[in-house]
Length: 388
Image (tube, rainbow, N blue to C red; front, side, top):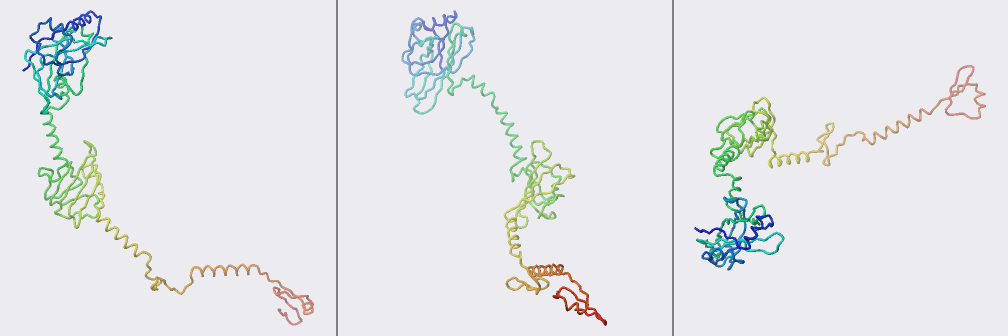
């Protein structure tokens, strides 16, 4: 197990921390690096004089900021993360350093470092086995409110953060309870042929009062309902199939009832209805689901009716000829219309005729300049009246 010494601030880091403690500077801890050089034998003042970390092998990531068990206003914990991805050669993390940058300055300084008592060995990645190493470096920063830590969270989390995130997920006990509930739902709502499902055997089922929620299989049963079920004989026995009772929502008393009857006659029957209650007092008729067989029979019936449409058997006992015509010996509609027209014309002509009469002697009659055919002439003689 790896073990590291306390963090040592470099002279530049110490100056920056003093300025921050006096409120004269603010700075950011920017990055971390690891070296294979073993500096554990060097004296503290020698480490403080360092301005660069020798023999840097790789840079790590700053992933967290932790509170210190010491003076929280002066010391902070910086969470670091290293892995072996892209490493072609293994090495020992003998020295790990932190870098910082003062606000307003572009210069990045070696702020502090820690040396290994027992270094962590970082293996190469040639076997494509990912190795991760986390540690927290506690450093003096003067005043924590004047220090910012640049944390990189590119898919990397600390144990603390991981534990916090995991709190929102279900535990094994929660999963066991959930599994139990799922099994119950499966038993109640699915598994059409499950041996431990809602199976009903060799009995008469009143669909108006049967209220078992879910999918219910029946075998060797007779079905009864006061609601209409077109094309189904309720006295039929030894039926098998399924009854689906599905609430419209959780806790609803109204539910959809679907009855699926297998091998009834030459096919399958399916009936549906919305069912309000299970008391049997309110009964709804079933709607029959039309099958391909029903549609085929319906189409054949319609075709037969179309073929028979328009074929006259007899008219007043007279059968049609081979062309479908019937000779009745009576006027046609056109002939009747023409006769009516002629009669109306004659009536109109008669209405215009006005007969006139003339009475006189023979001599007077003979002296008339002309004789009108529309006038009746009466000639008076000493013996009789002659009509001309």
